[in-house]
Length: 225
Ligand SMILES: Nc1ncnc2c1ncn2[C@@H]1O[C@H](COP(=O)(O)OP(=O)(O)OP(=O)(O)O)[C@@H](O)[C@H]1O
Image (cartoon, rainbow, N blue to C red; front, side, top):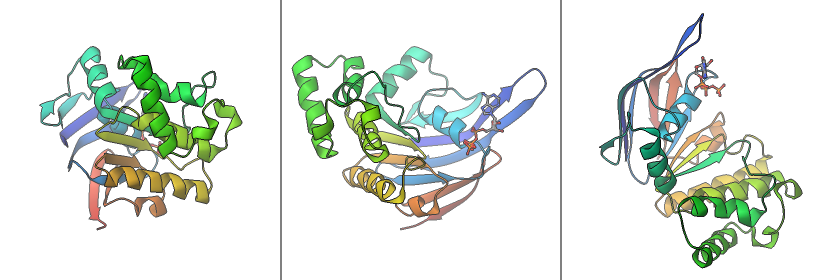
């Protein structure tokens, strides 16, 4: 599903040049659940932004389902992104002014799905995430665990092939964290490919494989199953 080869990304400011990704190469097959780990500053967020088509690399190749997307323009990237990729962030990133229902509905509005079908799909996913009883609440009225369940609902409502998760349990206690990890595991078992950046060895054990990064490169790949 994903094949990156010698991916390069350098940030330049007036005084300094930081090589965030240094000829990074790896492959993720459809249906895998992969953790990406490494010390602060090793390039994990940069990598996730590129994999999520939110940013483009300076060099190298990025094949998404066999298509070279490294130099897609913003319009093509956005189109591919909204059809194929769901994001889950450490800080949930829900919109405070929208209800639970409206937050989850948003990706479907961007996709041009009509009202009645949107309602059906949002209700189905809220039900699955066991958050239906909070559909008219606003994010601030929910616990952290509930907010992350809404964020996972929003990430999966368009049936993405790939979920990118950036420290999804970083702001949760262990019980809510485990619940979110179980949700991700269920989604993976139903066929969704997951790439998760995490600092937690515990969370990484839910995945099949760990890609360890250092200074913008892969250092090791551990198979867990
Ligand atoms: N917009 C930017 N401008 C300049 N340098 C940047 C920018 N974004 C990231 N960097 C630098 O690139 C390197 C990689 O950063 P990145 O955020 O990808 O690391 P990370 O592994 O996600 O770190 P953390 O675990 O702390 O979130 C770091 O040295 C960082 O300071």
